[in-house]
Length: 277
Image 1 (tube, rainbow, N blue to C red):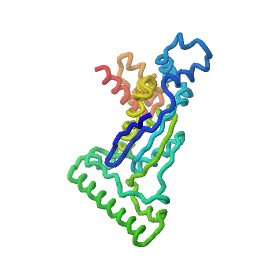
Image 2 (image 1 turned 120 degrees about the vertical axis):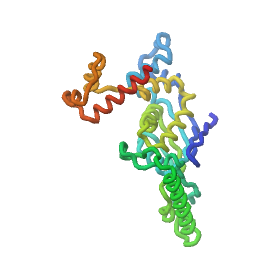
Image 3 (image 1 turned 30 degrees about the vertical axis):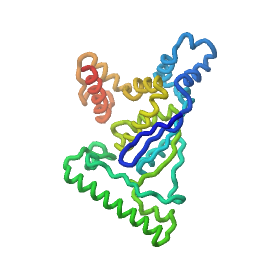
Image 4 (image 1 turned 90 degrees about the vertical axis):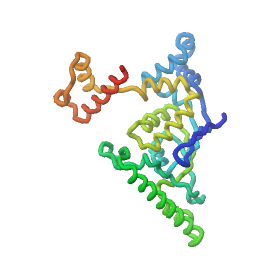
């Protein structure tokens, strides 16, 4: 297949190099459980949606996607968390790393979020954010100058010299994953709580893969990405909503929900109401 390339961030790339399988192949893998005859009674689309709806995941593991990724080290380290994928990354011990550092746009240089302990809040002071961006650029340039000096003036080994480079240094890797685990990766990394940079990468990856598995991707969007799950206690509160009541925090605590669970339930309810408009 012809590689599909997307440019992301300032120096980043997402390239879909290869695809194994198709919607039809996934459906065929599912039908082997029933031997002959089901093709006549159930279309590929209906079968794939049934599999996704009921979380029958193994047929989706019969398809795979292979990417070349050029991303900041901070993003690559989050990819390592997805242990169901296979990856091979450029080595700073073997290769001299290029002078490519990720410098966030000004609108991404916001303060620490008070709601999300591991994320950023929107920019509130543009001048301050511009100064922050400039500081990151100066620090990155100084770090690479030190790296270059260690290699070419002090003749330090590459494996030691690379230690002065910042986490925003770009790295390159190959990343391969089956479709089921790729969907799981996307669900986590396209979420609004995920880091902005990995959300950009995940969206570009999904955009490249979708044309190859249109039926599976649409089923995933409908039943996983854009769906909500409700706990047993959520359903108790939901029954009150259907009766025209508005559950309070006290109502939630009486049935055993925490304040955070109640807040999450009300957020889901608000999103559901928004889709009705």
